[in-house]
Amino acid sequence: MSDGLLVINAGSSSIKFSVYVTDNGDLRLTCNGQLEGLGVGITPHFFAKDADGTVAADDLWPPVEVGKQSALLGRLIDWIEDHLGDATLRAAGHRVVHGGSGYSAPVLVNKSVLDDLRALTSLAPLHQPHNLAPIAALSELHPDLPQVVCFDTAFHAHKRLEAEMFGLPRKYYDAGIKRYGFHGLSYEYIAHRLEDLDPQAARGRVIVAHLGSGVSMCAIKDGRSVDTSIGFTAVDGLMMGTRCGSLDVGVVLHLMQQDGLDAKALEKLFYKESGLLGVSGGLSNDMRVLMDSDAPEAKQAVDLFIYRVAKEVGALATAIGGIDALVFTAGIGEHSAAVRQRVCDLLGWTGVRLDAAANDGHAMKVSAPDSAYGVWAIPTNEELMIARHTRKLVLG
Ligand SMILES: Nc1ncnc2c1ncn2[C@@H]1O[C@H](COP(=O)(O)OP(=O)(O)O)[C@@H](O)[C@H]1O
Ligand SMILES: CC(=O)OP(=O)(O)O
Ligand SMILES: [Mg+2]
Image 1: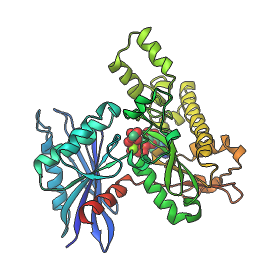
Image 2: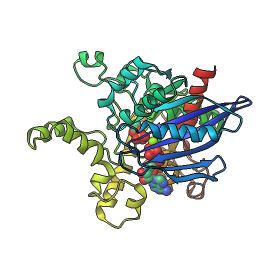
Image 3: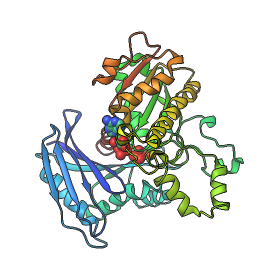
C-alpha cells in the first residue's frame, strides 16, 4: 500500500492541485488540475488530467452558497480519494507565499501557525488569504489529515544582512521590515535540478530568472540564496504581469499627498493595475498577447520588462561575484525564446551567447558552446518541491 499526498497551490480565483503517490522511495505524480470559479454564485469548473496528460475530469460543479465554499474542497478530496488506486491519502502540502520572520522552513499546520500566517496578509494581499483559505477549510472537513505549509520566503531565510536591510532606522529591521524574497520553492527546485544537469555550475554562481505572473530573480551560490530582486512584499523588484515592481517611495508620497489615494487605492494600483498591464495601456498582462501586438504601448511594456530583467542580472552577478549559469524558468522564462534572446542580447558584454536553434527548440541548455557561461530554460516544479517537504515532515 502506498501513500498519497495532495499538493495545493491556491490563488485568488483558482485552486491548482497535484496528487503524488510514494513509489519505491520516489514521488510519482498521478494527476493534477484545477478548480476555477470559487466565488459565491459562480459555477465552479473542475479540470484534472492524469500524469500522462489524459483528461480525467472536465466538469462544471453546482455553485456554492454563502459560507459553504469549503464544500468544494470536500468534493475535491472525495474525487482524489476515488482516483488514488490502492494508495491512501496521508497529507496535504500547501504553498504559502509569506512566512514572515517566524517561519523559515516548512511546518505542520495547527491553529497558532494559521493565526501567525493570517497576520501576514497585508504583506502579500494577492496571495496569503487565498493560500490560507483551503487550509482552514480542510482542517474543518478532515481534522485528522496532517497539513504542511511550505513558504516562498523560506529558501531566502539565510541571506546576509546587506541583502535584507532597507536604509531605514534599524528599529524597523528589528520589527521584521526587511527583504524576505519569494518564489523560493521554485528556486529550490531549480537549484536541485541544475545539480543533475550541470553539477559544477550548480555548486558555483547561478542566477535564476523566475518570469511568470509574478516575476523575480535570485542569485544562488553553492545552492543557497544570496540575494534576490524581490523584497518585503511580492510587489517589489522586477515589473510583473500586473504589479509595478520597485518604485521610488516618493511616488507613493506624491500619489497620497497630491492625488489623495489611500492605502486601498494604492494597493489596487500597484498590485492589480500596473506592470505589463498598466504600461501597455490596459492591453494585457499576458506576455504572449503583448508580443503579438503592433501597439506601441505593447512594445514599450515588453521593452521595459526585458530591460529590467537584464539590468537585474548585473546587480545579482555582483552579489555572487560572477555567473556560472543563468537559468530562465516559469511561464515566460520557460516558453519565450524571444524574451531569453533579447535579455541575453543586452547581456552580450558579459560574453553570453545563445544557440539560436536550441533556444527556439525545446532544449534545456540554450547557450552556444562559446558562451562565457551556460544558459538554461528549465521548467520549474513548485508542486514537487512541496510534495518532497510534505513527505519528509509527515512520513519521515
Ligand atoms: N509562449 C509564451 N510566450 C510568452 N509568455 C508566455 C508563454 N507561455 C506563457 N507565458 C506567460 O507566462 C505567464 C504565466 O506564468 P506562470 O508561471 O504559469 O504563472 P503563475 O504564477 O500564474 O503560475 C503568463 O502571464 C504568460 O504571459
Ligand atoms: C510571490 C509571487 O509573486 O507569486 P506568483 O508568481 O505565484 O504570483
Ligand atoms: Mg507562479
